[in-house]
Image 1 (cartoon, rainbow, N blue to C red):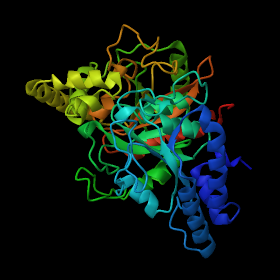
Image 2 (image 1 turned 30 degrees about the vertical axis):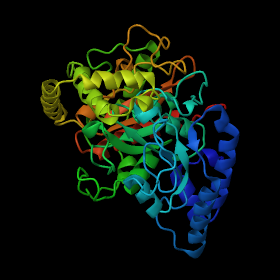
Image 3 (image 1 turned 180 degrees about the vertical axis):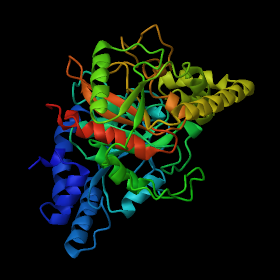
Length: 471
């Protein structure tokens, strides 16, 4: 039998139904493992053993009485410390938030998980307000990668990625405003989905606006589908929320490729330089997809780098979030985020309007490009994970980059926040140094089912997701 810490959510739920495991036994095991392992990783910023054990016992009682609520009843889930949780503080990695609350609201995804009986195992670390692609913050310090503690797990859902990779939980929530689910999924060797914008309700709405998505992270694509079934349910607080499609996302994640599936393939989007290990892994990955029946169409340069559009919109959101903080509070903020806020506050109304128009044109062009294709396949990241404590490859003071330019090493992620397309990350190999590498599957707009299907077909044809770090 697979060790509890490496069991998927689907396998845990099956064991609960069969009576071979109970939610209480699983919660106790994972809490003990967190106590032993997480002191070396800092994946969690909050653990409440009494509350978690109480939720697990309630789920155990439901199974024993035949009143289990659904597919995730009793399954442990970690919550990124960006999402509100009743009774637990949501500090977002910042010294500027009062920990005394009140904390009396659940974010929509958290509310749906509780309604389905999931057991909340704790809250995972994030960079301050989720602002960058590596996982450290002024409040709680640095989070490390289980595959090599001297490297970053990526961010901003880095605590979630690290916890999943280390076997501390089978499911974790993430948010993605420029790659924040897919970057840590890629560096940590787990699966993640940035759903179509509006697929998973959000409340309160992110200050980063309509580039910010909420989505699932797991160790398998199948679990992403199970998870999405729960958190994609409606919530009236989010007026952007898409109507219920009636789709069974779990079924989509375990489905075969559609007949005559055509996939656009791009190793570099026409302008990205790849680490040689990434290039080799990508070539091998698309060969697997071809062997599974996909017709591959090599894409020419799909678009010019939209980084300036993204930075204008994203930096303006950062300024909206923090520029009104009193000076003494602003001084407590991560210096890199301070720099972003100052840049954002200088953006003019004309520049913002021009960026919005350019985004509209970009989104329309990508919609036309994807017509007739089941998906676009790219590397998830151009490099393996780099040194912990640095914002960029090459060290904390890499002169090639400005204070906020994490986008320089995440060129495959932010374009699809602008277009709002679904995008899945799935492990596709390892670097020569033993660090995970990842494949990105971008679906046509609103076709989260296709992104999950393609990622799931690839995953089942390989064994990368079955490998675990030697902690």
